[in-house]
Length: 381
Image (cartoon, rainbow, N blue to C red; front, side, top):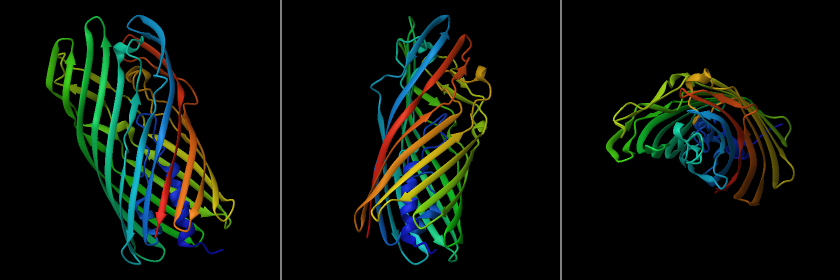
């Protein structure tokens, strides 16, 4: 069975619909940044991809914080989206270059201000925009290497708490981070590829404003916080038949490198430190796509990730983390000879409740899930 470049390109474009949904225990990733830069080699001439993902969190907490018991949930009307954009061009039979623009780092925990957890934190929000130029070079017919550099703007890092009656503790900052990706892809035979991706950590310092009651600081900073850890991904892709594509992937992320989040020069005049005791995580994913008709395909993705939780007593209640499972169902349709649409829905959830006992005086259980839906449109010419 011979598999054309176009067939593999269809497969990898479809993979974009789920490949970014990973490492979501601490910070959610959606976008192209987890895609192997070597995979650009499947672009035939020119390629333009535009799309996004919308998230609908349904997370609840129960327990006690500083002697106050109760239950709370994320704001029910909360929803947020992530843009995805790619343009790629083939310069020769061996060289392809492209630019990805996406939101690779996101964490939103919009807890209600007046809930029992407010003194421990609410309004946790991280937004970013990343610009990633990529190059893919085919050394031989079977071996391809890729490299990418990423400039990520953390344009909103908010971390607030309601310390009534003293007042609201509000901290807002922004900053930049720089990282890179390395990729290699090897064609075992015309039906089978294996590829490896390394994503360097995204580590930055942000600065901004901090207020607490009538106190104010315009020299507020966070320390070198790891927004995303070093991650290693190994993926095997195979056409089982001319219509059936199967993918198996294993990712390993070094979350243990992150020890704390220190809010320097904040308005309280004293230290405000969020300690973390996280384990490295391993994620296992399976992906299947079937070509139903000449124009339409369907796909199913299943993933499971080990918990980053090491010691519940050292992890803050506003950053819950536990074992994570993801189910994604979707399809793609070829509208014209050079235009294809892919859409998907999914559920990202913790299989078991999460228990945190930090800060001291807190005992909180978190449960729930994130529903999401999205898609992309691909043009090639």
